[in-house]
Figure (cartoon, rainbow, N blue to C red):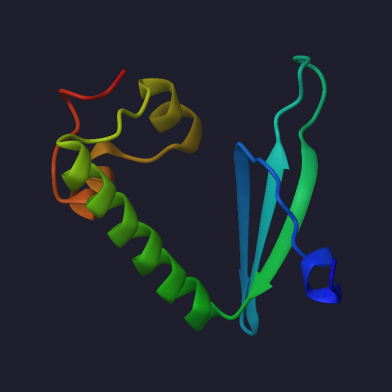
Length: 105
């Protein structure tokens, strides 16, 4: 195994924290705890410029739209996600360009 391969990290995350500053952004990925009183375990922090973050957001958005088009429907989002993230439905619909009422779990 070469030195480049040793740098590759493969992990799973179900939580994300975004911190923006005038010189960049820190994306902290974490894994939920198994117990109700335990806090999440940080898995990785990736630092990028704000410009890179904006391009990444576009690339992610386009990839999901292409996936949904190929699958013939939208990815269902549980109502609990909207509550916990405090994302207003109107903002969600504006961002994705469609209503997810038929697909919300």
